[in-house]
Length: 326
Image 1: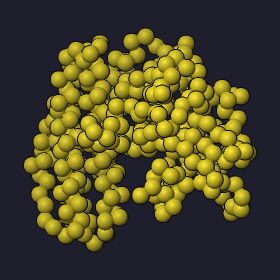
Image 2: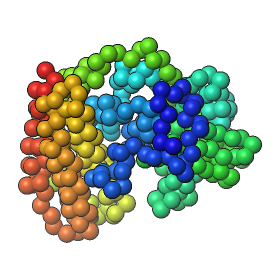
Image 3: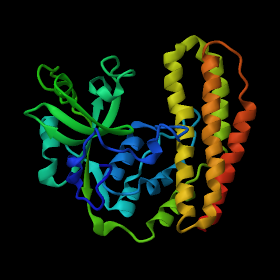
Image 4: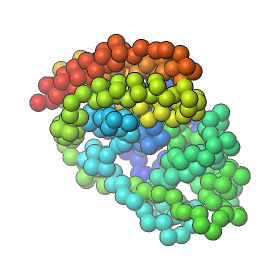
């Protein structure tokens, strides 16, 4: 069971983690970057499970930038979700225990995104599970208080937890009195708010906010600076830095390639050729990340040629998409 086309929001509660098939953008076999960040990956799978094609929402990659320290932490924008899918996303006021809030979803005909601690998420085994306290976001699909179990979307798939993890994720039992409530969003469905031909509108909007100058040149400057301090900071800091820079850049480019392919098969055929230069950026970012891992161990590396190629490919791809949707 992979998705429920044209379903109401809570039909996803019928999905089985054991048979769920993730969206192709999370393929372990074909992707350069299997994951982007917890929020984007969460929305990819949530849209996919609801029977929507999430690729249209990848348009936000077109307005990504490098601010001198990190690449844009990509997110599906609320206005895009409204006009593309009829989904309204707003913050939910958490005035009662978080489990009560999540349980209220079906009666209110809405889903929730919930910020949680990866410490309690078994799908992060080998990274954060029971080893690191890291903020991340999930969408609970099915919650059973009596059985202390939950099926939830996180990162690249659909998973299940129970027992102590259920107690921990919802802050049950003994908890510090000063524990802050998590950030929670509500997702509601208004199909009448979907706008015809919204894809081109959304793409043009993000292109109108295309980064000024050369974001790849700014990334290159950041990388050259990082080479000077990474060896003293250790591999843990390297992984955090690489996540905020090269992974976000490369994964965003790969999502943009998916978008170009979608445009090319539909309203803007000429956009299809932009997929290749976007993929060149994605592959280049992966290669540079491998080089920087060596730099973090004190080895000398040169990324100038690779970054120059990424800069040329990024600009070329955006120009091709822009020309195609004019």
